[in-house]
Amino acid sequence: MSGLSQPLLAPAALASDNLHQQKRLWLSKLMVDNFRNYQKVNLQLDSPSVVLTGPNGAGKTNLLEAISLLAPGRGMRQARREHLPNVITQSPHWAVAATVQSADGEVKIGSGVRLDAAHAGRLMRLEGQTVSQTEIGGYISVSWLAPHMDGIFVDSPSVRRRFLDRLVIAFDPAHIGRMARYEKALRQRSILLTEGQGDASWLQSLEAVLAETAVAVTAARQTLIRDLNQEAENGWLGFPGVRLGLVGDTEQWLADMPALQVEDKLMAAAKTARLGGDTATPGPHTSDLQAVHLASQTPAYLASTGQKKALLIAVVLAHARLQERRLGKSPLMLLDDVAAHLDANRRAALFEAVSLLGGQCWYSGSDEQQFDDLVGKAQFVSVRPISQSDQMPEFEVK
Image 1 (cartoon, rainbow, N blue to C red):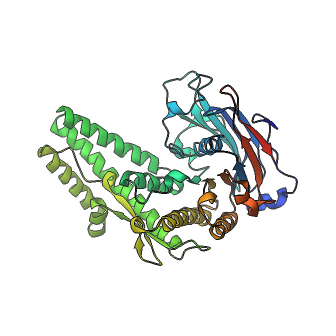
Image 2: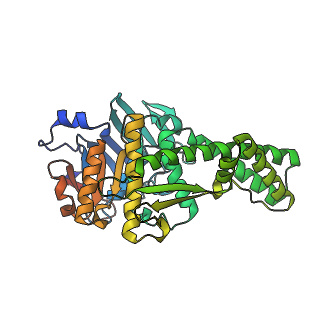
């Protein structure tokens, strides 16, 4: 047994040459500093799959969350940055860094909050230089499934929109900027109207930004949905065929009229609402993502618990396959406690599907026997929980 600050080496049974031919995007080194229940982590990896096992609370999900923050966005848990540092150190900084291998070579990326910038935002680093999230998105994509996502098809529309936007960013990192611009203008308009400030020309300029950006955001979402539906309609390895749809005023108008006319209609709707004393306005912030189980023609919100789970997995797998074909690389896959909620056949199908994608996958679970099919094919790491608050988790490589 050794501390998590020690290098984690691959089992000898895993053949490096074969692995390098299979993998398209993978981490060969992962370092985590002052994050959640970890003070220091230094892992060296050479495997198509990594299986983290251990009891609940050991820190498995925290490690997956750290990896998710290497990619654009707010990570797997959508957590506030002040909740990420290790509570024992009482320091506001945290960092995660990795060496990423792909068909294009090796690149070092990182994410975190600096020691000397307690109130600054999160930084993204590429080869030692601070860069935008959009630029990082050109080098790494991370997809995940976690227990909190099981209710996505019956959750609020905002949850589904965030899920969809994360899928869009994998193909179009500039979508981050579009969404930020739209949300900023929406907030500014709402504040001005609520406080009774701002003249008509100021509000009209904000509404022009909203209209133009709304069309761009909606077009990017619809483009991905169209391509994803083609990829997902026939199902894969026992996972069902699925059809996605985006419902809202902007979507309907774009189906009926040119984009410039839709911009005019959005501006007119915003002005009418404003003059009527209403802060609401149509746009992509009100759209809803819907899904249908194609074999049974059942809307996802009416599907059984098992069908909902299978549909979600089907969408994530189709998205990964689309990246493989369009971008030439599969995303890193983070599957947090997913195997526990699948029967043996579905579990085997999931393992096969992920292996065919060719990218690195990180699994987590409390029952090691659920991953028996991956023995000899994956790096198994048992994470042991702390017994005292000032200790770090330990691991055992099997």
